[in-house]
Image (cartoon, rainbow, N blue to C red; front, top):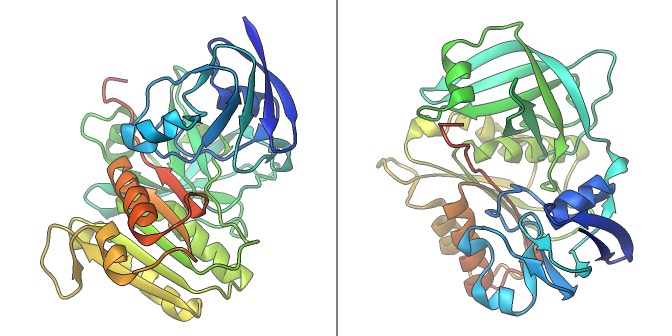
Length: 336
């Protein structure tokens, strides 16, 4: 059965089948609403069901609390319509402002920066103009139709290629290939750009950025775009890892304090004693900021870190929910 959906603000109409999520149907209709992981983990697509009923689907509990669900909120990447709907997202724009494309690319460089981190540099076709916003991601398309999502680590002005930071997953099919058998000049296919994790340049609020592990990749794109654009808002960047080797681009991040006036870089280690900050990266933010009510926060990393940051920053430090922008990294099952 097909259901009619009206998306607010703007009263954008579209239709969705029973087996489609609200997000899938909206994207298929050329409408872009906030989203990140598309797996019920990051909470970026959270919106309100104003009229009608949905199947809420499966999601990470921290991304949608029982109280929020009781208030009419849902995760549009998981929710499927049971009736006609009127739903409200934080923002709505036309997806065709930056078209999503499926393109081939060529591996032009592989650089191992840690035992479990490989930087994969992909050359784009010279005949194609691939536009994206800093912080978005692409899906690598595997031969059997499966996908693997990776954030773009370079900024749009540094075009012609895509930089991906790939963490090795034990038993991972694609990451195993990247670390063991991938060669330069190999041809891949991808789809993108995807996601709504990008810098809101119309805001004047100071910024806190928080990255966990390879969640540094889209944050790197955001910072490099900010440098290129001459951003003047204060930025405090926290990068958390277990050990020093996990800060695989620490030297680069330190140069940003000079390249972008107003940026402060705070590396944090959870499992190794050193001269710098220790503990959980989101706790370092809590230790430094008693009030986040006037800030924008951009967070990228594991779902547990995103959940903890969202809960603590909003409940304990007054951060408005709409000022928390997140991209949660989830990993495909090794069996897939």
